[in-house]
Image 1: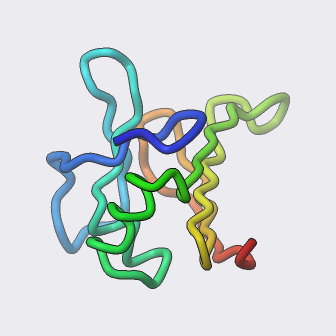
Image 2 (image 1 turned 45 degrees about the horizontal axis):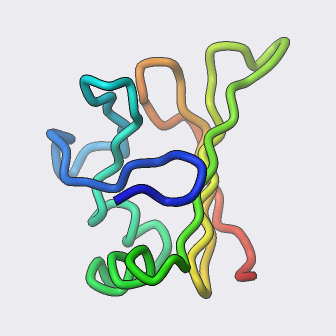
Length: 102
């Protein structure tokens, strides 16, 4: 499932218990594990997937510019929670923060 503007939420080969990591699929789309994302948002995975099906989850990937080139800001907004992570070009999470609900 794809949130608006870009992050594909699908099971990926990310190792459980390790820092969050985005993976690229063969088409070049970023993949994020729904269990990891739901945990970051503080909601159940089933609720996250339900919000996606109902169009209540949005996501955006912004490439860094200037001194942030090679990094990506991923912003995900659910119905009552938000999360933002900064990732390097390999998909490793560098920093993250919770966002206020809409």
